[in-house]
Length: 347
Image (cartoon, rainbow, N blue to C red; front, side, top):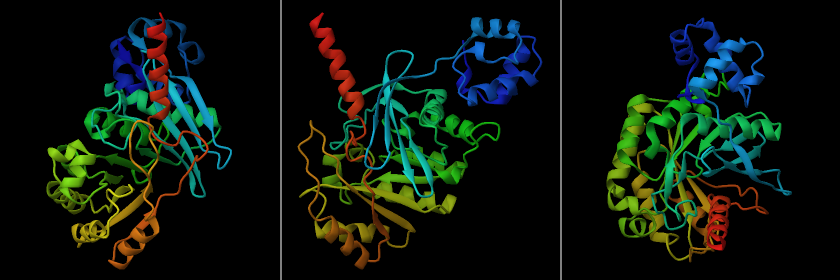
């Protein structure tokens, strides 16, 4: 069966030609999909015979809003989307003065096991298709009645663990007949899968690479992020240096400040040493509390930021949005899983 939402206009045209249909119908079909059509019946300028063929040979499975939270503080909207197989993922619409940003998930669950993250608690169920990632952008925009200017791949899942689907999603997102969001308006976050970073560097895409650092030393980072036991800090920074040389794009390093764990002065000094000579930006993140994790937000945010600045590091503190809703990525999905488990136990 054809996964229509994961196909480009060119691929749709080729598929329709094989069905004996004019190739120009592919572009028409793509445009309907990019407008958020939920069924073939909505596609009024496609002949009924073609729509019948597509019902027999293709799937169109828009997500359903399972839960929606709207912040009364800043208008941030968090969605829990139910996919066609019952799996759920999250996306967030964040409003900034420069435009609206949608944060999307790339997997249902995550297998990376980071100690501070709710997304990984239940492990990974499966990868998302390119169309399922794209639908989060499209249907978030349509439901909120808000245009989208920026996209960040920082939701549930590790984007570089689903590399091919994410790459296809970027192609669809960037297509002039679709949402036409340029690569310079896309940020992709990784926990540090070095083979994926190197593949991405070879493509020389002009997106922003965000690396979840969270500790500049192997002992602390391995405790927080199991991926560091395979790809350690030295290898990670070497890959980041190569990425900059290939793309010319400054890298953003995400750093969730955790009380008594990664907020010591010597760790700030180590960050400055690691970044010496590499154009980079450190984004300090106030830790979101996760019920299942015994970690607390740092009480040294201001001191840590000031020390990094004195050491010559470009650093900002991420603005906290949606403080009155479930801010931590993975929380809504986790609650949905717990509810499903309770229902199963009750039966």
